[in-house]
Length: 418
Image 1 (cartoon, helix red, strand yellow):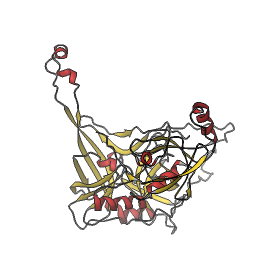
Image 2 (cartoon, one colour):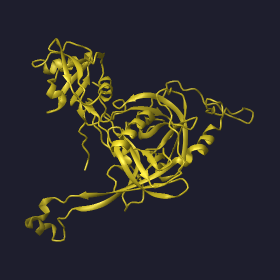
Image 3 (tube, one colour):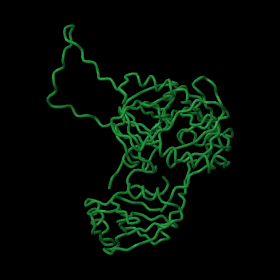
Image 4 (cartoon, one colour):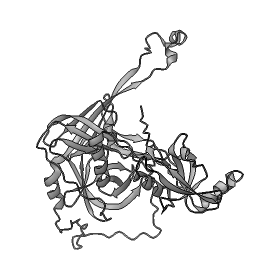
C-alpha cells in the first residue's frame, strides 16, 4: 500500500492584514490509501542527498583556462531568445489576482456562562470574532471580454476578488465557478479588447520540452522563469494529493507562492499547463495541471457554474503481495485474500453507490467495463471518465469467487471547509 507522509502546498501567497509579510498557505492532506470520494497540492519533505565517497577534484579556472558556460536552452526552432519572444507575445495576458475573505472565529459557549465570566472578565464578548485574510495569486486571460482562468484555491471563499492587468488597470472580479476537486476556477471581469493567451495541447507533451512560467511570486509582478517538462502523468497520489483527481505535469521551471493559477507555456507561447503546486525545500520540483484538463473543467464551470464528478464511494488500496500478507496476518479470521494483483476495497461509504450496489470491504476489483485494473489510479481514471447515472460493470473477486456488480456513479458530494 502506497503511503505519503507529506503535505502539499498551494503556490498561493496569503497574509493577515496586521502582518507585513507573506507566507504560503499550507493545506494538510490525507495520506495512505486513496479514495474515490471527496477529492491541493502537496508539500513533500526534502530528501537529503548523500555525498559520494570519491568526489572528483574541483577544476581550477585561470585566465589561461577557458570557462565552460552552461548550455543554453533552445526552442524547437533553435532560437535562444524564444523566451523573450514568448513574453512579448503573451505576457500582457497574465494577471495578478488578489482576494480577501472574512473568517469568523467562534467564541466557546463557556465564556457566556456567568460562572466563567467572573474569572475571565465581563469584557470578553461571546459574539463571534471576525478577521480578514488576504492572498495573492495569478491567472491568465482566455477571452478578450474578460474570462480568466486560475486555481480554485486562489479564490476559494473570497468575498472580494481584484484582478490587476500588466498595464496597471484593476477590476473587480466575479467568480463564475470553481472546482476544488481539480483546483480550477473561472473569473470574469467587465472589460473588453483584452490581450489573450492561446491554449495548447497537453496530450502530446514529452519530458525535456522547454517551458516558461509567468506569474506573480511573492508579490513580484510579471516574473518570468523557464525550464523544461521534467515528467508527465504524475498522479495525484504520486505527489501526496490523493483528494484531487488530476494527473500533473512536473517542471523544473522556478515557481513560488504567488504563481498559483499562472500559465505554464510552451516555446510557441501556448498555455500547456496551470501552475499549482511546489515541493517546499526542494529545487526544480513544481507541478502544473495539464491545460486539456483545465479547459474541460472551465467549459463546464462557464456553462453550469459547477462540475459534477462521478462518485462510487469506496476507499481503495493497490493490492501487492506485501499488502496481501499484512492483511491476511491481521484479519485472517475474517478475510482471506488469495490474489496478488487488483484493487482492494478497504471501506465502503454508507449510502453510497457502491454500498447500494452491494460492494463489500475485502472485494478485489479486477476489471471495470471489461478494462483490467491493477492500481488505484487506474480505477480513479475510469470512474472520472464515466458518466453519472450510467452503470459501470465492476468485476470483483470475493472469497475466491468472481462476481459481477453493476455500480451507478452519482455526483461527488463535495465538502468544503468553513
